[in-house]
Amino acid sequence: MIAIKKKTMLHIGYAACILLMTMALLWRSSIGYCFAYEYDSQNGTTDKDGNIYLSLDIKTDNPFIVQTDEEILSDIESGYTGYVYFGYPTCPYCRNTVPVLIDVLKENGIEKVLYCNLKKYNYQFGYSAESDIVETQHGTAAYDSLLHVLSEYTVPKTIKDAGGNSLDTGVKTIYVPAVIKFENGAPVSCWQYKDAGLKLNNGQTIYDKWTDAQAELVHKSMVGILM
Image (tube, rainbow, N blue to C red; front, side, top):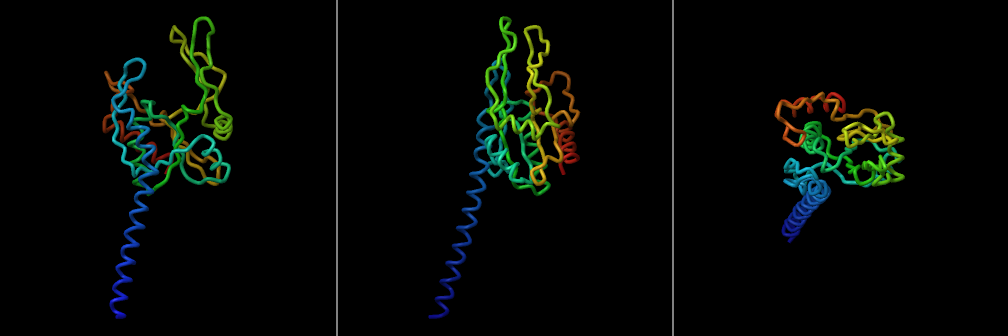
């Protein structure tokens, strides 16, 4: 009788372990699902000029936790230690960057990265001959606070006029894609696309997939700055 009880308890314990492991996998997948959907849902779609967005195949067990600007700011103010990725799914540079970033994170054992789609919260501008610069979206209060925290990594936000000339909008922006490392709520290093020194080949556009050599260049620059 005692042997039967022990065997039953072992079966129950084994089943409990399987259940916990399954729940952990589902929890991990559910976290990454939102990020994967945000980027993969743009596969094959086009921008206003007819450029086709690069198709991606991001797995749901990716390390990205999608957060709002307010949630990111709250974590930073609470002394966050870890990485934050700033970008957005229709940014052609971001679409090429994400697969490389996932590889870098995996190789270095980093299982969690906060992600913020800045396009939802930053300042947006348009141009008209009558009104010159026109604000089409006002940045949120949390976004303004993020700009203050990350001031050393910000640049002036510009737009093009009808002649292709750059116009200063008078506000700052975070150059994306950007991956910032924090220690106890303070930014300690920042990787941005421009840091890789990547140059496009003849006939290659920003919407085209990077070559293996280009991806490796970005990979090395990320490791050198962030790890």
